[in-house]
Length: 216
Image (cartoon, rainbow, N blue to C red; front, side, top):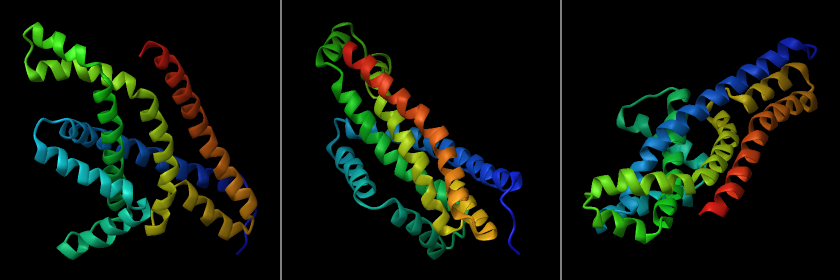
């Protein structure tokens, strides 16, 4: 039965946007935690850690996100771990985010002037204190703009989750389109929702980049 496009359909698409925001937030936070560990491994004095973390980043940056989602969704059941679409997408996007954030933050850490570390050593600070109190705060500030920029890409990338059955913003628009036979309206509404989320973040990223470019 063909339905008219009404406020009910808008609310259905809006529920998809809610799922997109929740998924993006979880993947960004969890990916950030893992990404920090990747960044520290990439800057570690231990060669094997640098090699292992570098290989991890190369894999996730060198393969499509869609393939990564497929590997999680269809690969985990091979090992007896059957997961829902929600769980598979969360794991897949978290792994993807950790690789990219790890590389972004690695660049920020290595951009901190060497003199900062030398001054910290002269003050008698240990390796842990030098990293936590001196290097990381400065490195994270340097990396703030690209981090926000990656968040925008992550939000838009959640649209691929619909391929394995997760109902996010794009999938919600597709469902509404199939029931109303008004794809232009459905996808236009979804596009406006994406724009409302991503445009302010894009402007924030540009602002942070211009602000910190002068100070760093």
